[in-house]
Length: 339
Image (cartoon, rainbow, N blue to C red):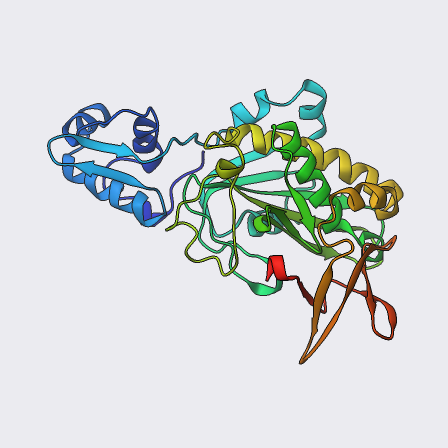
C-alpha cells in the first residue's frame, strides 16, 4: 500500500497498521494497541477518530477497549493476485492498491501519458473525491465497499466505444455471480441494482484521439457492507452485498479479483466485436425491460415503456408517438422502483 496522505500523518501510527490490529475482531484496549504499535495511547485515539471520520464504525468501551462493529478485510494486491488464475493474472497489467486517493479513475487518468501499459488496475480504501455519473459524488465508507478502476487502450476511435458502460456492467454482474451473489441486475445506463435498490455504479471516462487510438478508464463501485450512517449521503434507495448474503458478504479482495478478471475478458471481446456481441447477455440482466419509465430531457419529461437496448447500447423507449432511442449522455431514466 502506498504512502499516507498528509492528513493521516503526524501521530506516530499508520491507520492501516491500526486497522489491521482491529480487523482481528477482538476488543483491544488502547494501552495494548499502543504497546503493539509502539506509540502513545493518545496517538491510538487520534487515529481511531480519523478512522471513524472515514466511515468506519469503531466502538469504544470504558475499561474494555476498541472493537470494530463489523468485520473488515483490507484490500491487498497480493490477495487479489492470489484470487486470480495464472492466465487471468497474466492478462492484467499492474494492480495498485492505495490507502487514499482523490479517485481511482483520476489516478489512472494521470498515468495515461506516462505509463504506456494496458489494463492497469487501481483500487483505494478511501476516495476523497469519488465520482459518479453526471458529476455526482460517489461516497463509500472505509471498508464498506470496493472501488476500483481499470485502464483499457483501444486502437480505434471513440465512436466504436458505444455501449462500453453496459459491457462493464455485465462483467460486474458476472463477477458477483462468481462470488455467490446472483441477484444483481443492470439499470440502464450505469447502475448495478438488486431488490429495487442501488448496489453499485459504473463510470466510463474516455480520452485520446477521437479517430484513434483512444483509451477508457472504467470505474466500478460496489456496496459491500454499509450501515445507516454510511448510506446517509446516498440520495436514492441502496442495498449492499451484506444484505443480499445474509450478513456474510464475499471477501472484498475476491470481489475485486473477479471484477477485474471478468472485465478484462469482456473488454477484449468488446474491442473486437463491439456491444452487439453482448446485447443478448445484457437483455438477461436488464431490469428496465418492459417497464414503464420516465425519461427526463432538459426541462421536459416523457413517459414510455423500455424496450431494451439497440446494437450500440442506446435505450429503446416506446413513447406515445412511437419508439425512440435514448442516449446515455442526454437523459436520466427513472421507474417507480428506482425513483
